[in-house]
Every structure is written in C-alpha cells, then in structure tokens.
Image (cartoon, rainbow, N blue to C red):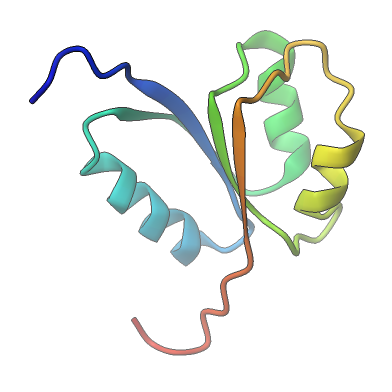
Length: 97
C-alpha cells in the first residue's frame, strides 16, 4: 500500500438501511476512504455538520422523505459544509441482492 495516498473522509446519507449497508461495506474495504457517519436523512446530516467538519465526499440518495439530495446540495448554507465531492445515487432495491 502506498502511504502517500491521502485518506478521504466520507458520509453516507440514504433512507434505505440496505443501501447504507451496501455502500458502507464497500467503503470499509477501501483503505483510502474513512466513513465518518451514516445518516438516514438530511436533517441528521445537517445536525452532524453543525458540530463537525464536513466530509470530503458524500454518498447521497436522490429521493428521501423530507428533502431530496439534489435540493440539499443546491441549497446547503451550513458554513462548515465545504464538500469536495458528492455522489448522488438513486438505487432501486426491489431486487434481492
């Protein structure tokens, strides 16, 4: 492993527990990414941002109950929310994995 590769922080935001689990499982096998939290909705992530540094990357669902991932990114006004990258997902989990 190359020690010169920086470790990036990330957060997972998805209202589907199965989707969060799948993404977290992949991230946990990726040495250069550290998951700082899993959140079931945007308000819980916003609460986290009020007292913590924003992660480098956010894996976020598009369709969530209170606010969509796209609306959050376009309207984010939290001062510490300087996110380097955001992956917006739309996962259909109707098929068994």
